[in-house]
Image (tube, rainbow, N blue to C red):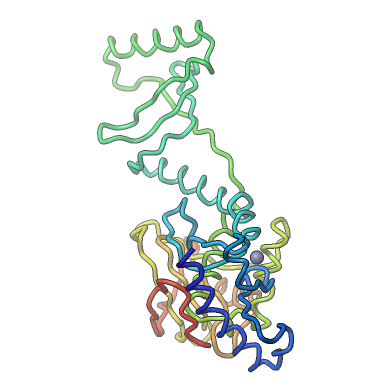
Length: 303
Ligand SMILES: [Zn+2]
C-alpha cells in the first residue's frame, strides 16, 4: 500500500505537468491528483490505490523473471496476465526444456518406448531428464507394457533404445510476442515518462493491447539465446541513424520502440530493421547510443 501511494504521488504531478505542456491541462478535473494507467490511459484518483483499482505490475512479467516496477490498473494488469503473459511463460518453459536448462519446473510430456506411450511430467535435473508417470492418465495395461519395454532395453544394454518424448505445450507465438512488446513499452514508460508514451507514434501499441488478435504493431524483436536471463538495459539507439529507436533489453529479448527524437512509426521502424536483418534474424550492423539505467521504479526521465 505504502509503495503504491508513493508511486501514485510521484506520477500524478508529472502527469498534470505533461498534460499542461501539451495544452491538455483541462482534461483532468482541477484540485485533485490523478494517475493514468499507462496501458489504457484511464485516469484514476488517489482512492484507486486504497480500493485496489491501481495495482503494482511486474516488468517483465513475474513468470518470466520480472520485478515490481510501476502502477497499472487492475483490469489491464489481470487481463495481460491471462491474454499475453501466460503465453510468454509457456513458451519460455518449453524453450528452457529444449535447451536442457535445469529450472525446477516440470512439463507435461508423453514418453514413448517402442511406440508405447506413457503420460507424465518431465524436468531436467543434474542427472538428466527425470520423467514421472501420472497413473491417473494412463491405462494400467499400457503403463505395464511401457515399463516392461523400458526394462527390456535396460537389460539388453542397447545403446540406442527406441525412446522419445513428446512435449505437450500450447501457446500463441503472436501473444507471447505482444507480452514482450508490452513489457518493453512499460519499461520505456518507467524510464522516460508520460511525455514518451503520449506521442502519436505510441498509440498503436496501446491499441494492440486492446485488440490482442489484430496485427497492429509490427515490431522487430532481437533474440539472443546466450544473453544472461537477468540482463536489463535501456539503450537510446542513435547509430546507425536509420535505426534510431529505444532498445529495451530483457534477457534474451530486445524490443525496439520508437525513438525520442523524430520518431519513426512502428511500421517504418519494422521496415528499417527488416532491411538490416541477416538470414539468421540477427542484425547486420552494430547499434550504438546512450545507455540509461534500468528503472527501479517509474523515473519520468523526459518529464
Ligand atoms: Zn489500464
